[in-house]
Image (cartoon, rainbow, N blue to C red; front, side):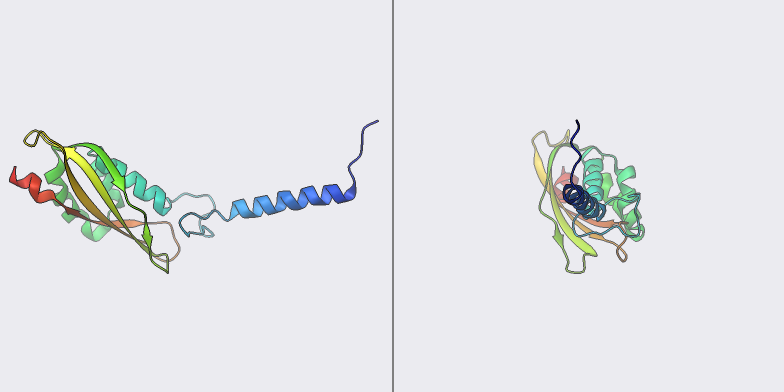
Length: 154
């Protein structure tokens, strides 16, 4: 004869299930709560930063431009012309420095690359300053590169 679970074990199971669902529904990443975007249509900071950095690493500057703050997009493309002939071999991101209000973050990324005129690997550093309006996940970057003059002189 099958054993019928007691009312207490059913309550315990339902409590555990409810707590698990409630904890999972908060959906926090890098201090972000997505109450305004329950279907996760926008990227979290870590997702946006990773996608942007990978696009730069693969010389997809036009696609990376979509992550750049609208006011800085033209200057960004001028800056990236120096990297058009570069071949990236690696990159490394430092930990995120998130402000207390969780509306801006700074990330330093070091790229390793070479060009036909510089047949050995060099490193350039990008300072990514990410911002967002309110608690949305619409993160935009202002990018500053250090070391681009090495490429311009060769």
